[in-house]
Length: 381
Image (cartoon, rainbow, N blue to C red):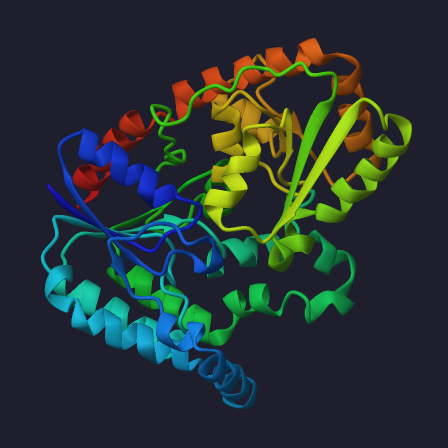
């Protein structure tokens, strides 16, 4: 079959593509590589000419500030149209999100209209920020979430302006438009499964695919110090709960200066960021989630201990008996306590790392997940 994957977040569609190809399908990814992360795409429609030109980019930001129009979106639209003959008549099309190009509602709708008009079987992932998911988070039904800081402090509205645009009138129109034309929406994690439950066109959860054939287990390096990696994406600092990690690390560094080494990175491209995984024993991923994103799963596949969402709902869904990751809530004292436990008991790091790898192989194997997608598409087309 010939499959088009539209958009990319955290390498999800690249891993799915690898599984689909292994299973005998032809796959094309069209997208912008997810901004600074620069994930591979086959058809790149990013507005790079405008963004990479210092003067044009300055003008771009000024125009956006005055009019809310991003001229890089115009370049994306033009690039997409140049490739339109390569975007027709696929057996299945999957959108990474209801706004997979993230170029503003006017041009977004034009590109989506083209895809809907020229492809019969279009599916949507419940992934990233979208109208339905952010609306659910704003309801406060989760004990904590990426939006908890805003619920606790409405003065953070400016910091959350990008997130809040996903519940705007324009976004609701895009959401309704997309749901009118798709065959179904597929949640990628327990959080989205809960947020999308009992809503129209929602299909069963399919976990993120991970190419375990490409990811080797990194042997536990016992060189006298436990290495802890804290990767910061500045734009998502509040949402990921990075301050709780920083507060916990301050305690641990003071208490065990000779037992640990902390590596902190900020806004690195994917290839540079993933390289740091190799030397770290512990990865600090998210403090306000209920499931793992792709970077956490890659680290788990390497046999690392990851501080991330792994609470009751997650454990119940996968019927877990063993600890595969350290469940992390917005509580710096608890994070510090869990870090201390691992620092004083390195054997637990090895045990949890083995559990993590086994879990990813069982529940996230890219070829098995690719088959689940194809079966779901075929059943619901």
